[in-house]
Image 1 (cartoon, one colour):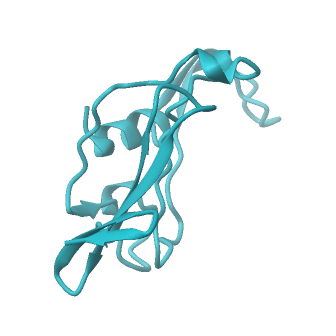
Image 2 (cartoon, rainbow, N blue to C red; image 1 turned 180 degrees about the vertical axis):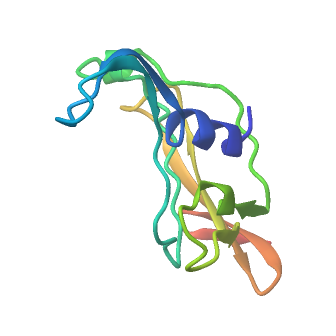
Length: 129
C-alpha cells in the first residue's frame, strides 16, 4: 500500500450521499449528492501520520499494531487535492519516524532523516549514515 493512495482514501475521499434533501428554500428537492475535502492553502511543511495502532484496541494497547507495509515516494504532489493554485502542493520526503515493537506499550522509535543529501539513522545515541 502506498501513502498517496492512503491519503486519497482516508482524507480526500468522495462521499456519496443517497436521498439527500436540499435545504435551500427555493429547492427542497431530494436526490443524490457527493462531498469531498480539498486543500485551500498548502502548508510549507507537511507531516503525515499513519495510525499504526487500531482504534478498537484503544484501552488495550498491548493487543497489537497494524503491520501493513506502506511505501512512500521521495516526491509527493498534492496539487490535485487543491481548490486553488495559490501555492504548490509539492513536497520532498525529509524524514521518517519508525516504530519497532509488537504494540503501543512496547517498542522503540528510530528516525531516518535526510541530511545534506545522505540518509542518516538516528537510534538513541547512535547516528549512522
